[in-house]
Image (cartoon, rainbow, N blue to C red; front, side, top):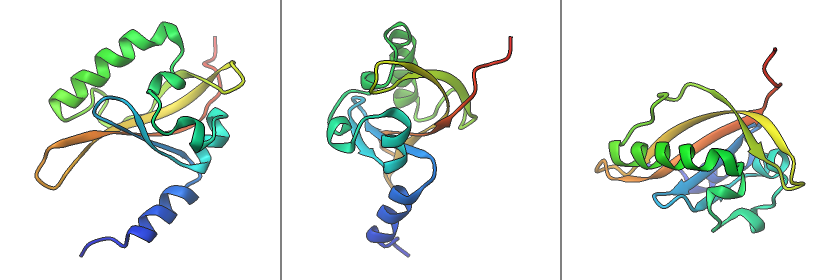
Length: 126
């Protein structure tokens, strides 16, 4: 049974968590309303942009190394487990977010890109 595209779209848009899909090159292709609220960028500002839009500069090199490894391997290092990290907000501030990642594959197993699910998080206790 093929899912109804309008239902899939409604689920993405109405999710309480931010959902970001990026293609193999790391360009943002899906950005839901919760992502707008969490990161402070509208879909119009985010779509077609590099994920660098929300990655603090000091975290970009390790992010891209992991991203390219996951795309090549067809799986993520953390296997969907949430990770606490910092992200850039449209205001220029950095904020803590909890993110989980997954590689997205087509029915034949070819890697299409990556999806991240994110929500606001509290800073770690010291």
